[in-house]
Image 1: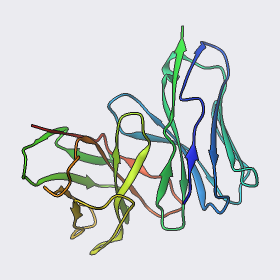
Image 2 (image 1 turned 60 degrees about the vertical axis):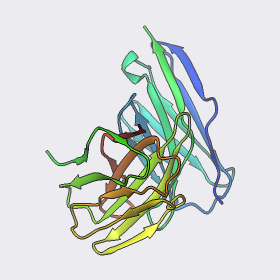
Image 3 (image 1 turned 120 degrees about the vertical axis):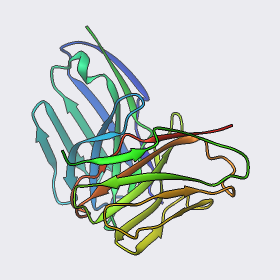
Length: 111
Length: 112
């Protein structure tokens, strides 16, 4: 069974610093990997989706990498802003579209 | 605007009662999903549906039931058999398995 781990569980950085969020998984036979953002009491917002055949995806200040052989993905957020404060979740997708989630990393960006 | 609407936002269940959570989407997506989120934990899949009139159990289907009679709608019933129903329930949809899942704003269910 796929296990998804996100460390650390919480992270606080000053505004302007780059954020590095980690996701590890136990089974390298993945279909895709998605990164989501969740604000308190809200649903999830999709940030980036990386297909199994891809090594990275970029959108604005966000960049996500995927290394299947080592079972790792990293989400980089450049020049963090207070509005980036949220919980970030990674999820491993299979060919049926089912997602296996990590517990998330709660991020606080202080002004 | 296209999106996913979940209702109600808050729901309270009495002992022995079944309750139904609504999920409607106008994104023309084929696949729909129900997840449960407990504090400090990631989301866990309850049920999913790839197409109308078809659905499959996820990892924690016991005590829940669903229907998919229309493409736009995927209601979830929490039955009295679910002994620990207090949680945040999230509905999602996607066009294909290669596309990101879009989420509603959730329903928070509590026990009276």
